Image 1 (cartoon, rainbow, N blue to C red):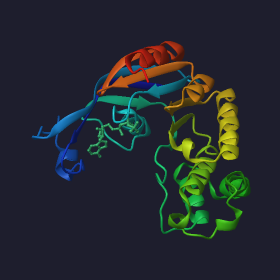
Image 2 (cartoon, rainbow, N blue to C red):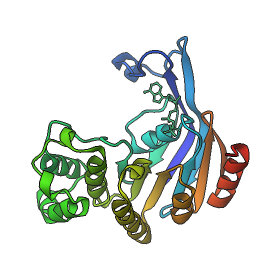
Image 3 (cartoon, rainbow, N blue to C red):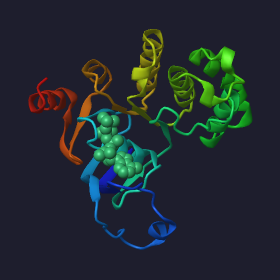
Image 4 (cartoon, rainbow, N blue to C red):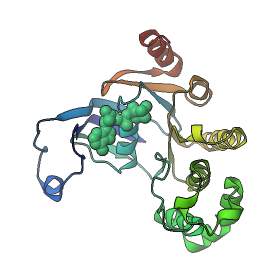
Length: 241
Ligand SMILES: Nc1ncnc2c1ncn2[C@@H]1O[C@H](COP(=O)(O)OP(=O)(O)OP(=O)(O)O)[C@@H](O)[C@H]1O
């Protein structure tokens, strides 16, 4: 489903990491500049369809960056990642949503960008809004929603997309208890349908509940790729609380 070979991503410590057009079209690697550092390096793994993978590591070790590479919203400076199929990313609270557009427009836009036709969107619209509990804010600009409500809407859409790969980065922690329970149930349904899941979480229970395999990142390196229990045990040993 996914093949990552020797992935490397370099960021700048001081200024933004925006790649210029020149960088984008320059052949080969970008020039290293002072202050550059590798947020990820030498990352290789393959994922079979239907696997559920938990990504663990302390803050700032490259977990979100890895999901962005799989989502195709960030290009690697080294190596490559191949994904055989579409990706439904829930990787940043507002990721992909346009603040000035209403909830309705955002739902339609996101679903449309993921290849759903007008009819399919219309058929799913009510259940998306119902799942999110967003009936009162359909015509509210997305930027005016509470952070919890943003996540609810985003999860409701993303989890309805039918993409074979689902990426979930931490965001679920923002939802309230009842909504989290709904999300967990939905994730379980998607796994039962054979979807592939990447879950970034600091919550061991969630990781054990959904994931069979773990990727443990430390300082941008993949230090362990193995059964989730082994990965969590190693992580706990390295970082006792
Ligand atoms: N656009 C960027 N420009 C510069 N540095 C960045 C950028 N995005 C991420 N970084 C840096 O890259 C490193 C990895 O960040 P990343 O967000 O992948 O970590 P993470 O493991 O997901 O952390 P957390 O658990 O806090 O979410 C961090 O040092 C971060 O500050």
